[in-house]
Amino acid sequence: MRTATEYWNEAFDLSVYMDKQAGAARTATLAKQLRQRGDVSAVRVITADQGLAEFRSASGFGKALDALTDNPLPDTLIVTPTLLASTPQGTDTLKTNIAAMAGVQTVQLDTEWVKRLHGMLDILRRVVLLTGALLGAGVVLIVGNTIASIY
Figure 1 (cartoon, helix red, strand yellow):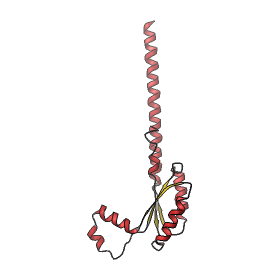
Figure 2: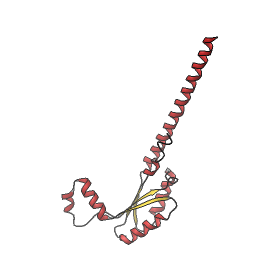
Figure 3: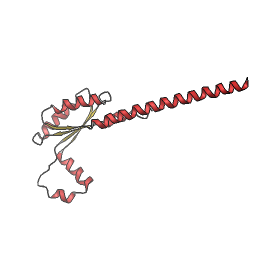
Figure 4: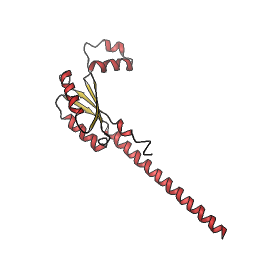
């Protein structure tokens, strides 16, 4: 089970939405600062134009988006925490620290999903332990019954 869930923590990304007035230079500076943190594994920059192009291709609202006079999307940073910082407490701390930085409008992380995932993993661990205990008890009963029937 540990081998199967080893890389699940890498799925906990934070979306950092920049203020529209921050500009590309501030976004690049913030990305550089975040990459130097010990609790950040990777930072991916999505410019407002890249975000609009992705949304246009994925949503099917291409013609409706053509009616817009300017791009309503902000520059975005996708921050991947390190494996050690991927706990619910670690991601909450990272979210709070990033939200306090200049030029950041919103930091989004579904911590409830992270907590639910850790809860499911705990339940799965207990099920595996219970199954192992039941199998062990079954072996002991079978061996005991076999020995008793021989004598």
